Length: 606
Image 1: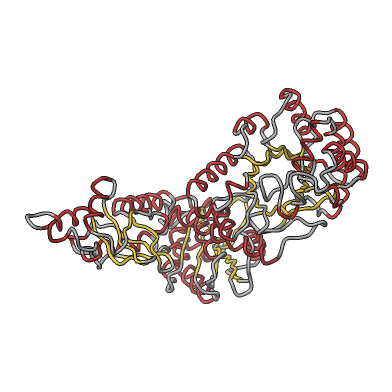
Image 2: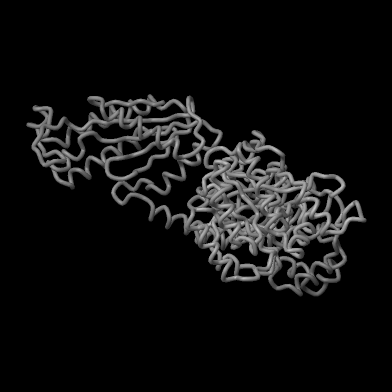
């Protein structure tokens, strides 16, 4: 950070920046005297910590952080700024920190941001507004839009009106505004509402151990949802483990910062390639699961932790627990992370009921009473797969919940009610998102399938089908006959499919086929053969004899158009590895244009 320069990795000072106790090592110096020597000797240096895009692992920008570089004057950074406030030397300290940060920021790549911490009580100072914006930025070759002022939420604002006016002033000049340490200060959402920042930086204490704390995850997700609606980007500060990184990516946080991604350094340096690749992998995994789960959710997304007991617990203890908690309808017995038994409340009551049930069973370990035969599903199984297995059970256990395991360990349970409700939703969604003319999956389902194939590890071949001269036929023969041609192509695509290909109808005369193989040439030729032999039946004899249809072009001029043929453009995993969907879309659009320029039936797969 710069300006306020409160360092990230502790409440105020990062481990790299921790340069002494709260007091000076030279106890004979007063706070004000030490500050004077720091200012007069320019004893401040800047370090830079990367802020990383959690979509691709590339550096989005750097936060400039300050350190005191003279050993005899080492002091707590927070204490230094408090002393500057108390002795009315804040502007001098801010100016020194800012200058040092800008000097070292010359290594910024184009469009990378430089985040500078600013005391909100200085930001509207005339010297700041004039000296910094008109001199420093231009001097160091930076664009206004690449500088982001970070305002620490923990700092009270003395003159709120002047502060907000200055924020408005900087926004008009295209500077970015970030609220730092959101979730740690007293101002809370008031700061966000009044400042309307471009970036929200979540306090590191919210991110710490977020992988182990569901409440923190809920809070983080709420901030992400809020920020997306408000047009802001969220930065997760203080990421220190791979597990924390994985969770914030899953929660769709935009940017990440912390020692795991990169420590503050004296020079502008790129993020470790291995860490960048890790971010990309987690993002792809999240992207695939998020898209597939809306139509084809995996069972793990429905699972809830449920209640569990140890095998050795006495049955009477378990019975007392579930009696005092009516919400426990069923539970599992865990030995380590493995499920060794399952039982419902009703079944346990039956075992303890009757004249001697309680006396015979209450002192026995609960493991001896539970059912060891139960339906288990892997976390990644789809709900339709699990639903079919659940419905094949015997009547007496038909409505028992399903135990879900992940990597061989207990993950949670799914009730039959939730399972059937989700299956119903799937059927409705498929009906809604399918073509009413051909019955084939529509754009939403197509997009999800493409994403799954592009970012998966299995081979794929994606082919796009377009009918040449379809508009001319439609105009000459009418929409009803045009629909017949579309249905004919859909039938040919289905007829030629022998390897469980996914077939979709994008709209109009555009179709798509996705196979789980990299060689699709034989399939394309089969479709061309089937379509060309059938489509002739849709033309009048005179048009067949002429070899063309008389119709008007897009400019209303009468013209002779050839009979309908197919142009097929494809991409496969043999030669391609796409980083994102946009890259794939550009390649396939370029190839489609080339294919459309060829005469007659034509296909090409790259």
